Image (tube, rainbow, N blue to C red; front, side):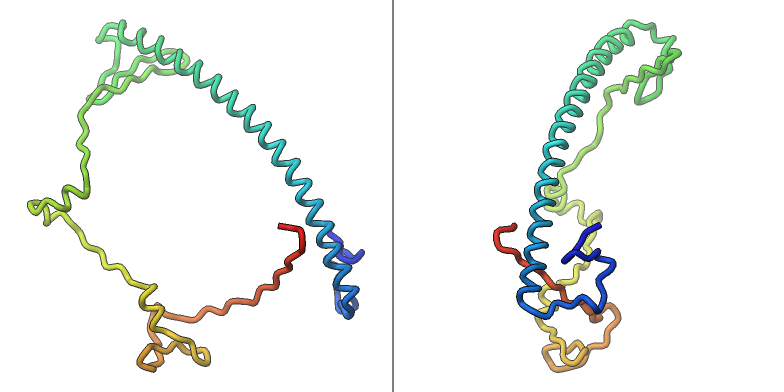
Length: 180
C-alpha cells in the first residue's frame, strides 16, 4: 500500500488538501523517497533478470547443441534407410519410430522475386496494384479548431464522416530534482 503524507492512497479525501508550500514540499520529498526506493528495487530486479537470462541462454545453447548433434546423426541414419521403408511425398520423406518421426524436407526450387525490379518492368503492369493513401500530415496542416468545430483553410466548418474531435484530458506531471 503506497502512502502519501502518512495516508493510504485510497484514504485521500477532501480532508487532505495541500494548503501551504511546506505541505507541498513534504509531499514532493515523500514522492522523491518513494521514487528512489522504486529505482533501488528495480535495479535489484534488473540484476536478477540478467542472471536468469544468462542461465536461460546457457540452457538453450546446451539444448541447441544436443539437437544439432541429434539431427546430424538422424539424417545420416535416414540416408541409410531403404527407400521402400520411408513415406515419401513431393516435398518430404518420413520415417516413423516409437518416440516420433524423422522428417527430412527434400530440396525443391522455389520462385522468389525482387519487387522493385518487377515494378520497373513494363511487361507486368497488369499485376501491379495501386492503393490510395491519405496524406493526413498535409491535410491536418490546413485545419484548425474553433469552438469545438473543425474549420478548413477556407473557413468552412467540416462535418465529414471520418473526421472528428477527440477530447484529451490534461495531464499533471511532477518533475523531481535529482530524479530521472
